[in-house]
Length: 600
View 1 (cartoon, rainbow, N blue to C red):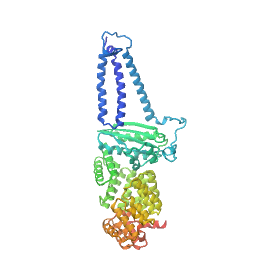
View 2 (cartoon, helix red, strand yellow):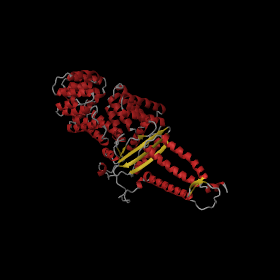
View 3 (tube, rainbow, N blue to C red):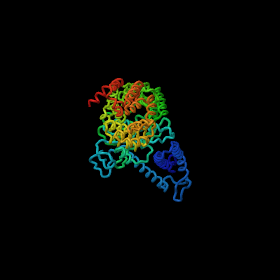
View 4 (cartoon, one colour):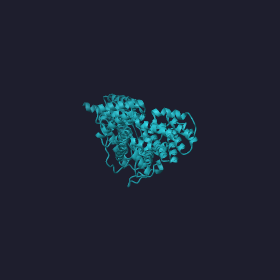
């Protein structure tokens, strides 16, 4: 008897086949379960090791033993070669057949869900006509629309290292940005969708709050030079999973993974016309990781985070100075530092402009760089026309980008075009309803337009989102003050958490009430040196016109960023008739804008 025939007689081949199929199924189930519970990488590696180690043991066991009606016993060498199938053989054959059926079912399900989601027919759906994307109104709160809408939730970091949080969050933000560039797809803005990070809110509630039909969620496991991304797309209208997939690739392929996910989502949403959309801009994996880290730090805000963001971005530039998004993010970081007095405003905005220009020299279609350039030109150089042109270019590239819309509202407000600012901020809030900055800007625009009821309602929403928002109670109280309710205004203002803002608006309210309170001179004296624009508003509100102009000229000399509010501030109105007013505006470069504002 040959060795091969002996292996067949002892069922070694049957055991090998059964073990291989069952082990593969165990590995798939274990990987899925462990990923769901966020188990570290070493657990799945241990499971795989045990399965591999068990294979030779199973073969040895099959050679030495056999399964009989009396149980397991050592193999008898006197058994005939051509005997009929034994109970052990039938059991092994049954195990193999069952495992193959389960495997086929697994592949069929995976193909149905992640590969051909567009061909699936749900209960009650007519196969002859594809589902319409507008069938959402009574399910998620989304208005009837033929435009598909989606929210990208922050991906969960399931890596061994909690420090990879920035990578998981950054990857989902990059995917959000990539999807937002696809014509015909409306994507909820980052601020609103990321507000659900760590929340136990259900998909249906998230979709309803964000006014979208579809929700994309996922997880990221980064280990060494390998990254595993798991994503699933859920139709919140009916709870069906339209698409899910798992990508395990080298970090070098992360940009291709992003493009694949975006393409698969578009396919799953039955979008027939994609239009032209640029894919991900590629770079060295280390540069990409540093870039995501800097964006993560910038979103956290704060002096130390901004400093560390600059360090990370400069490290990235040293490796790959040709990666445009890094320069754009550096420009944004310099602006943040300038706006928060971490840098001299002139120097900081100059650095922001230079970084934005380098980004645009590398990629002229980078909307974020155009917006950063707009802020640098306006606040740093008072080049209002150049800033407006930069905003216009950004709007052409990404008309639904909330940062772009906020930039449009900002330059419109600076130039006294309040109605245009309201339209821009309103659109930003519609796209990003949980964005506190956009809510605050919209409330200010309503207030400057004299639409006090709408302003008050907007600030109330802002305070519901965040009772501790620095300008929240101060702005709400200011609206009440301008609406002729100084007592209520003062009571509201005194709830404001920020000391400087509270003192500023409290001084205005005290003047309106005619109270000779030492708080007013104390504020103006302290602010005259460091915050002359704010002191000027208090002086003007109290009819101390000379002191107001003195402070305004000091603000111009120091190139105060706050001068952006000079045309819209209601507290400076009694200065407009003074000859010094237009001479001051000439120095700032806003005299023509003021003339246009008066003619409207």
